[in-house]
Amino acid sequence: MRKVLHYKTNYLNKSETFIDRLVRNHHEFEPVILCCQKLDFTDDLNIHELPKYGLESVFNRAAFHLNFSLPWFKKLIQHEKPALIHAHFGYDSYKLLSISRETDIPLITSFYGSDVSRLPTEWGWNSRYRRLAEFGAAFIAASDYMKSQLVRLGFPERKIHVVRFGLNVAELDFFDGNRDTSAVMMVGRLVEKKGFEYGIKAASKLIKKGSQIRLNIYGDGPLMESLQDLVMQLETEEAIWFHGFQPIETIVRAHHQHTLLLAPSVTATDGDMEGLPNTILEAMAKGTLIVASRHAAIPEAVIHGSTGFLTDEKDVDGIAKTLESVLDKRSDMDSIRKQARKTIERDYNIQKMVADVENIYKTTLPGS
Image (cartoon, rainbow, N blue to C red; front, side, top):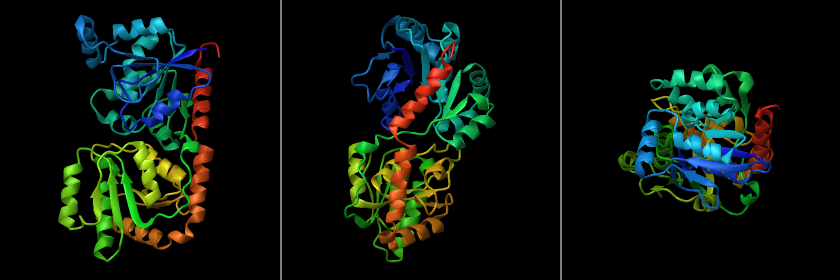
């Protein structure tokens, strides 16, 4: 079986389950993993980590920070003899571009969000992306919106393929039981682009009107303290709770207690944007109602009035009004919940994702 070498500098962060699902569900290619640091989701994989000690480690890590080609990477690739290299995120792909050219192994890059929205604004990355666009074999965008961003950045449209995230749908049962009719959840890292500030303000607005709404926030991050301070300032701490980071199993179970997922994403001040949050797709699969922003690729999955509800970014009044309306009419929302589930089953399942990616592999191989 032909090998594909997957590269990510840190393999993997806790939120990057979408990469793990792809790697573990290959059918026609054998995955090999290359990384600088092993983190999570590494069990039962053929994974190679950059040496941490000795002169070789010092030399290679210096080369890494200078965006130079790493001799250890090249040696490992020559040993494993992959047919293709698949790098995840644009900033990591660039680190393997020189090796790809030296070894004549095609380099495929998957983009996911910040590497398309924020990274190009940083010094030096426009020129690096021009080289990647010229010499990379193929590029995978997670949405139509992201494809349009890549085209604007100068990537050749003929090389760009849209492959949507895939869930293990069979593991996400559609929950049709009783839920807490006033419970709303927000899930994700506590960073600016998640827009949790606006979700808190909208929920607080309803609470002060006498609503029984309760907002549970799952996640951790640099804005934890400021968001907690905001809740205290709004005097709604009795109805808005922070639960910190929770494993995916806990989040999946939490859907059974919540009627609605709120995802008020925004464009951050540094230009950082979402791709399409996994949390939205998981909620749609579970039958949890969605209120989300018209932001990035979210409207490709959340069709207003069909699979969920959309509001404008940072529109606290609009978010509050939509939350109130959806919660009041929740008993009439079965068709929306079921249509959301069908959308996931049709467009966002892992089997489709793997088939789409492996088709790209096959058409990218030399001689294809």
